[in-house]
Image (cartoon, rainbow over all chains, first blue to last red; front, side, top):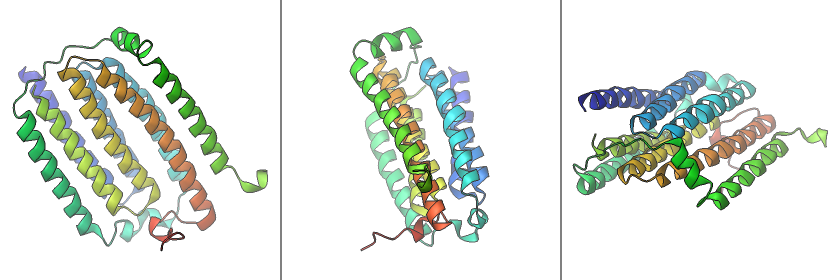
Length: 165
Length: 99
């Protein structure tokens, strides 16, 4: 039990520190690399509460695919702007205020409602997830696969050069 | 482990993401902040799934991951088009439809 708390504390601290770097660092490539740490932390948390399939999917999709997409995006849009002093808005303080107020409201609501409820993490196996996914949720599953296909075709159409046709 | 540990971490990540969306001017960095927000949501979904001993939370998190992947694909295509047309991905300069 103690080990679980210690593991959670370490992962959470690393994640929050990295997430703060993602939104504050001047170098855009560094931001992408800090994002990898946050995403790996999320995957570790999923494994910690016994969500094995989602944890592995998180690593495959996010760290494997999405980050590579981001790095391609960064490479293809490289300009002097990346290292600009003014990467942050002039409206930085309203943004901090908004985030802090939102955080205060959420913490207040969560502490009030879920004060000291215990989370006993019984592992949810891949078999259970797939049984549920391919019986009760088969229609949303197919719909989301069509959505993904449509989105990727749309991305190709948007990013294609005009003179190509 | 307490349920609130996961939920509070989710809330902190969500608010960091909101700050990033509001404060960043670079289009790619705004998309990264949106990823932070979506991951905070996934943490909550999986935590509640484990709390209620129900795989529904995991399944919904999987749907969110899929939609996030689609969103990043479209978002980066738009940023790329923006860069090609304007040689800059500064979102402050994208004010064509500003009233």
